Image 1 (cartoon, helix red, strand yellow):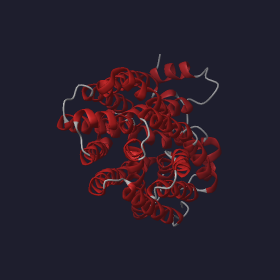
Image 2 (cartoon, one colour):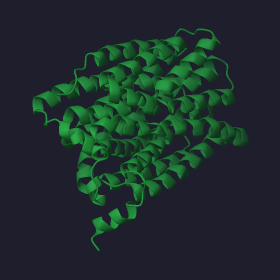
Image 3 (tube, one colour):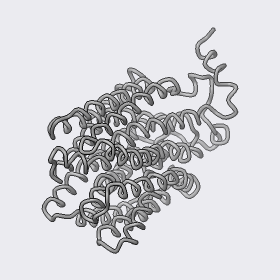
Image 4 (cartoon, helix red, strand yellow):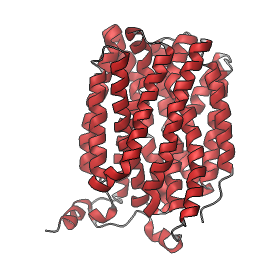
Length: 412
């Protein structure tokens, strides 16, 4: 029997389009490569830093190394996907993330953690870019924001897991708890790599389908944009994405350390706050993704950056505790919506044929922001003895991103 028809036969009994299975597998991919591979660092930094004797600056450089690896992967991702296909690249990348996390658990010093977390970043980038690129292939324009929004909430689930798991692990194993934390997270990522390798498909054609929602969108599908138009749009979107990478990573990396070291919170209580960030972020992708589907990508992006600017400002001003709680709630509510909106926006402006390459380009620029953000924040904190200045800088950058978002024009 023809393999395509055989695959289609397996998926035919589903009561919904297989694109939503792809979205679910994308959620798991983001959960593993970004949620566990990156955002769990914030929960593990205090205990790992204490055990290994890390300074604020070294903590910042470890986070930066992860983003450098992410950036290197973005550069090679397009060629890898062309040769191996998105499905294989995502599987191998997730496997890399899982194995390097296992290795971090055995590390004995700053240099080893730095190099291994660099490799973790490479796996994260090589998994995230292709899986977000699948949105433009599997979904018509009117559903892209919603589908991408489902994928990005994987980070929220991972934060919830880390917020509950890591304090318990540290309480049981004490000073060496961070090692068991990385070990457990690495094993989870390896398991997810196997699941996603089984579920993902490169395109609807592989299973005898057309993109989800294509029938309604086909009549109004725009013609392929010119190269000059694509370059201008990518520059604009890239500038916005750079500012998001620069700002959110400062908060995500250092907020737990701020709570523990500067506000006197216990690690357990800080973990509970991190859990609530994860819980609230479950709404960020779908809510702002649907807003962008209905009101336009510019409105969706501007709304996210407005919320984030206030969140950074509240913690940066060192206001009383109720404002700190509000800051955490606001950040969580809008946390991971920008990548989903960007994935949808690239498909809208560039067309499906150029979507993966376009998303790779702006992700490269986004990676530059992620490299600069934690390194500069760590150095500023080391010099001033507090992260307050770093959060105020992030608030100003987020306000700039909101202005640039409002300046976006509708797709041709």
